[in-house]
Length: 400
Image 1 (cartoon, helix red, strand yellow):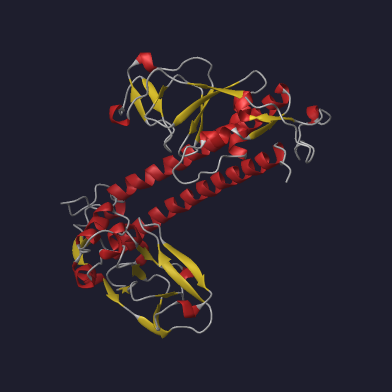
Image 2: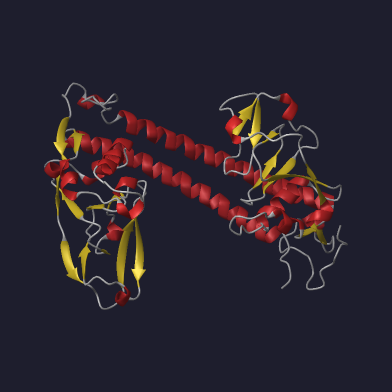
């Protein structure tokens, strides 16, 4: 075990300190391995034995806080809670304050010595994490880390403050998930299910107005390619994210780096498809900010026939799993870039459409839910930003 080393490089004092501890002096400093111990359970549960439901939760180094369940009481860790779980490969850090079983391989279960508060150490590891370096064992790096810490009362004050903010973040996350789940239900019910011609949920003014009509995409939109010469100066390039996550913009600083002599201009409300990743849901409606951006020939653009459909309605069709599945069927070939969408087949794809007033009503409804989701996302981001600032202020900055 290593001997404690003091940092002579600068005073270990945080920028933010609670009034009770303004004159409490410098923080102490020691190696992580001198301040902690590890717990090794008698047996780990292979991932193949995880249950989808059970009596006791299983914790491993995956992104999921709880990755499975078990009914085997003999494998449960109940003593010395709360404990910290560290992912040896993933560097993930979890605070566990309930009886649990260790799943699979690659985690370290960490307890603290009397000089440390477990919740304080957990927050410290969020502030000063071990950086993941490809696929390797990282616990050796964690053991060598310095940990700076004040008295136990100040540790508790810091931990309580940050933990209360974590609770707010968790509450806001759940609020967001509720709205997202509500939208998912609306998408499933405001459009006809497979094999049906009317949706299960219909606005009162459209009850009894008849079946939706099946149309080929070639009947509701038409290709419109606005060819332009490649700019000689920097320009706005556009791309499409997979899984229905919209467009992204990139400022192309050096046009000479683009081997193509011809590009195509995008207008607001265009339908844009990536022919190489259509099978992965790389399809989007251009936003106002995208207007005037340029794409290559691999991103054909379409405009909607206003007498057939509206872009704000169609943007929800392209997020349906059934629609993305159809895109996969018309994108033959191997994995990745070898799967190229057949543009002629794209025109032949069929979807059901209601009257324009009903399309508008559905689009307005879903757009309002999207706005609410964005509000919840913004609120969550503000809380996370606030916590990041507190982490930076409540812990000392180590010297150069």
